[in-house]
Every structure is written in C-alpha cells, then in structure tokens.
Length: 188
Length: 188
Image: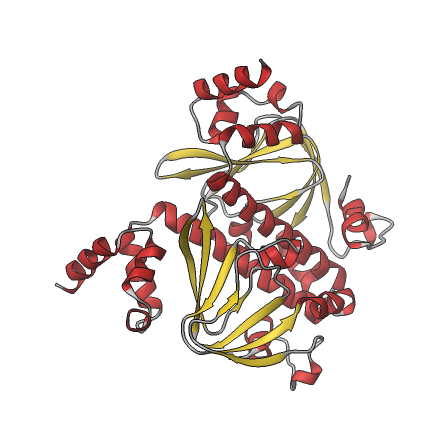
C-alpha cells in the first residue's frame, strides 16, 4: 500500500504516478529503534507507513505511556504539533525497519489552497485520526485489559514476537508481571 | 458569527449568501435544557453554534462525565457517530436557549464529492475537533483542577451564573464540595 493506492481505496481517486499528486512526496527507509519525531520537536512532516510498524508514546507528569502502535497502510505524524506548530507532546519510534512516504507539511498546506484532491485527502486522514484517537481514549477507559490485549494481538499476530512484553504492558497500562499472568491464562 | 463569517475568518473564503454555500443550511432556535443528540442516537447533523452554549457529556461504565462546554462561534456534533454512523457515546444538551445553523450530513457528503470549499471547511473543522479533543484529554491528565477551573471561567465569565456548581464539578471531575472550597480560596 502507498499513498496512490490509499487514495484509490478510500476516496475512489485515480492517480497514475507520483508526479500527478498535488504535492511532492519523498520515499525513505528508517531503521528499527530510530526516533522519528521526539518530544518537544516541532513536527513538519506527514508520514505514510508502507511497511513495518511504529510506536507512539506520550510523557505525562514524567511518566511515559505508550499511546498507540501504528501498522502499515496508515498515515502517522505528531498531528497536534503539525497543526499548531507547537512542540510535540508525543514521540514516534520505528519498532521495525520501516518504509515511508513523506509529505512536507508546507507543501501540503500550499496544495490545500487550490487542490480538491489534497483537501479530500486531508479531510479524510484527519477524520481517521479523530476517530482513531477517540476510540483509543474510550477503549482505555471502558475495555478490560485482557480484551485490549486480545484485540491488539488479533490485529497483528506478529506483534508479540517483535515488541517486548514491557512495551506491550506500557501500552495496556499495567505491570509486565500482570501481562505475563494474562498471557498464561489465555494460552491455558 | 455564522457559517459564512466562519469561512471568511478562518479560511479566507468569500461567500455572499447562504444560497452560494455548497450545501443547504437550516436555521433553528433550540430551548434551554433540550437534548440535541442523545446517547445511542445515530447523529446525522452538524451544528454551528451562533449563540448560547451547550454541554457535551459521556457515560462511561454507567458514570456520567461532562466532557466539554462549547461556546458560540464553533461547530459541534457527535462527530464519531456522524463519521461511523454508529450510536453516539456522547449526549449534547443546550445549556441556554441557542441559535444554530444546521447542515445535514448527507448533504455535506454529497458536496464533498465535487466542492473545494466544502472539503476545505470539512478539513478545517475536523482539524479543530481533533486539536480540541486532544487538548481536552491532555489538560484533564496534566493540569491541576484549580487551573482548569480558572481557564474555564476566564473563557466565559458568565458560565458560573448560568451553569450549576454540580455541572461544573462534573466537568472538573471533582465533588461539588471541593469546587466550593476552590472557589472560596480564589475569591479570598
């Protein structure tokens, strides 16, 4: 999946080549464990994740939480920082080697002035960010930890092979020992 | 402020009359205390608040919280429900008599197919919803109750005259008695 495919599948927009997009894109490979966007950095890029996955964390009152894992086929960025041009409160890290397509936010903003396709894409991706963020917040408040673990694993079976127990526990908001007990209970 | 003004101020788009908008709008007055959108209702309207203010609440594990107060000059709706067409997890109530402009979501969706202005507006409003929701979540986790109270009151001085102590306490996530103590401390 790439941005051209994403436009076709989600918005029924037919674009043949990258040159026909209303903004330039760059392709890049980023190594496992690399910090893509750090805390307090002002974000100026939007990423499309072609392969691999990334972690989104947030530091609140000096305690770090993992907010999210993002998988291929989705856009990601420190979006509040992009939109407000204030320092990011989230950190983005590649959990595997990843391939991305990158849109510079200044290019995107310029294309928003005149391009129907750019605005359709911007609207659609922002809707996705909104729904995703509200669901995540709600799931955290309403779903039992065991259910959130099972949903994460069913989304991506290989996540337990790639991401450490400590990180998955940080995502679930529990101690790693509690996660080990949950996993034993599920297996047995 | 109305939708035509909102387009001018935020997106530098000049529209003269409602007939020139890419979607039809209806104007309506809604009485104080009226439930605009209820829990489990499927939302199909987007509202622009011309005057008055509204309350957004959420019910989590049978406990009701006030998520937000929205003031004039902003759009509001049960947005996740609009976008997913699933039952709403929030309830919207008019706290004063309010005047609104209403866009039917089916009309808006049709205009998204072809209209640059509709997509610019949809993108911009969704960006606002996203930033607003993320900031609210973060403020709740990081800011002391007293600071959140002062910020609310400084936004709208008349809120304490119109909204009950119980509701403001529900918004702050504290007992009404604690809020009374905070208010006494601030006044003295």
